[in-house]
Image (tube, rainbow, N blue to C red; front, side, top):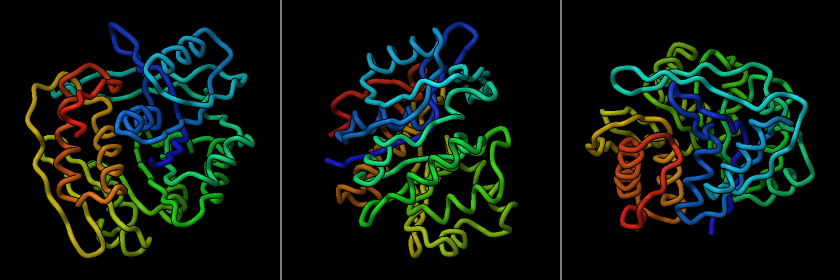
Length: 282
């Protein structure tokens, strides 16, 4: 069983008519556990009612986590869906997950994890950024590190991206983020993979499918067709299912196709926390 540490934001996704548990690291941890890994989320919640409800909701969903309680409000993200049901986000400032502490348990988990997953959003504040940096430094070969670049709302700098890429083995990005990277570095994704010595990049492109790019190969897969309700969390489910299958020895094309089927199932349901049926896991 693959031991996974996911570190970063856990928050409420606030829709006009409801609120749903969210945050890319939380979504990844949820799906990774569904797919047979031992995944644990490290995050921070506020000493408030939102935090209590979020902790209870995460537990009911089956997310295994260690959450520090801090003197900042629990994270929220106001979500607006466009005509294609693609979300835009407005996150609250200086919230709990901006202040994830480097606990002794986090150090222990980082040192033994087979895979550490992190992104850019939780690095917008120095405290969480420093915690993530220290956790990554504790990772030991042959363990792997997955960087979900997640470029939203300018919560990043070139320095953060460079440091994160330098620490990572795998990169996850979507087509919009690929365009931003090309502008930042004035290089294509293949050159970035080479420059930062990455093993592969997972590129999701919505209805245009996905590409898995290594130093020497590229695998393309069309998107699995579905009736889209919303796309929240689809990329996280794709990444979790792909990387777990890949680490378990499945070929890139087969892992990619299975991940595409899972992502389509998530798109056909509300929110990111979707129970995947057994026939899609096999």
